[in-house]
Length: 251
Image (tube, rainbow, N blue to C red; front, side):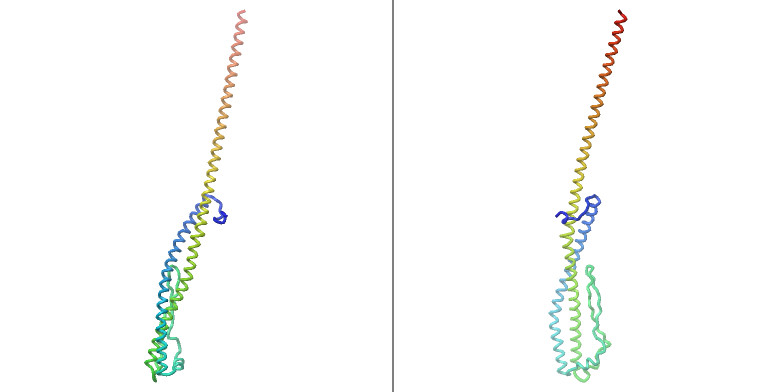
């Protein structure tokens, strides 16, 4: 159980320093990812409000475009064949740009019109004013559709990136950092236990050395006492022999 809650590492001072460095890096990474998530969320909500506003306006624009086409058909009849005959290339074109939001590249579609392929002769016989007006209305509607498509693309991109970023933030906050902290606590506990064992061992060695020193001192003292006793005994023996010799000389 303890093995699952921490990293499998040998408790040393070097490992403790490495774990502290990893914890600092994880804390800094968590802070940066949290700020990134907040920035993306702010942009995400702004885009959401823009999409809602564009969709509300899109209904009116589509209604106006359909009404203008009905007016053209009423005045000039069916002009589909004429338009298809004169259309050689697209009038509305797109360029794709990218916006950088907290390191995330978001595509941005920019529409522009190609005036070289304008239908100048369409509606020359009748209904020219209604056709031009309908063309302008549809062109405006297409511009709005492109803007809406750009917002929808950015919305989906940010939604996916925010999910990934939040998963990373949660993983660092609830998995990586607690595991590193438990590993650091384990290493500190093991090192403290090792220091206590070393201190106890040193105390035992010191006590044994003191006992050995006392034993040596006692043995030295005992040998000195025995030597002194032997010396005294030898002195007594010499004195007795001298007295005996003096007595023999007197007699």
